[in-house]
Image (cartoon, rainbow, N blue to C red; front, side):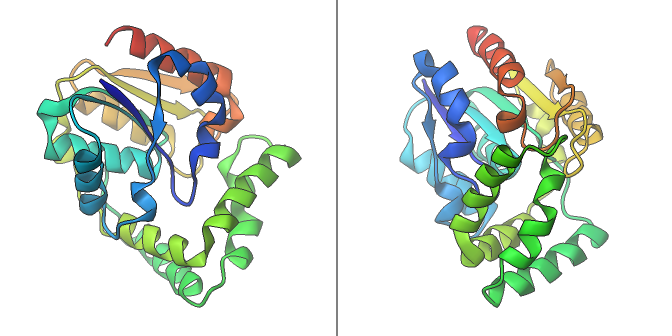
Length: 227
C-alpha cells in the first residue's frame, strides 16, 4: 500500500512537514498532481496512473476534493481515506462569484493583493511565523497556479453523490474554527460515508496540519493503525 498526501490549493509538501515526520513508518509521499493538471478529474486520473497498487489517501482542502474524485474513479484501489478541512459540495453561486473575481486577478498576475490580506482567515489564531510559512508557500506557487487550481475547484462535481458507496476506513478531520470549510461540511461528509470517523480539532482553523499538528498526527496515526 502507498500512503499519498494530497496538499491544499497552492500548497506543497511543506504543509505536511510535521505529518511526514510523525507518519514516517508508513512511508508517505506527497503528490503534486494539483499543480500539473487543469481539472479535478484529470488530477485524480493522473494520481492513479502515477501510483500503482492499493492506495491510502489523505487529502486536505483541495487535496480532499481530489481524493474523493480518486475514490470515485477507482474505489477498488483505495484502502483508506482521510479528508481534512474539505467539502464534498459543488461550488454554489455566491462562492463561485467570489472565486471568479479572484481568478480574474490571478490571471492578471496579481496574487499578493488578494492573498496577503486574507491569509489570516486560514488560521484560528494569528501566529506570525506560521502565517509567513503559509504565505510564502502560496505566493511561491504564483498567480498562474492560483488561477488554474481555482478554476478546477470552481468546476468540481458534487462528490456527495458517490460518498455513500465508499467502503474503506474513512477519517474526516476539521478545525472547529475553520472559516473556509466550516465543520458543517465535514459533518456532512462523515454522515454520508458509512462508518466514517469525525474528529473536530479545538482552537484550529483551516490549515490544521500546520496549526494543530499534534492533534492531526494523533488522529491520522490512529486511523492508519486500523488499515
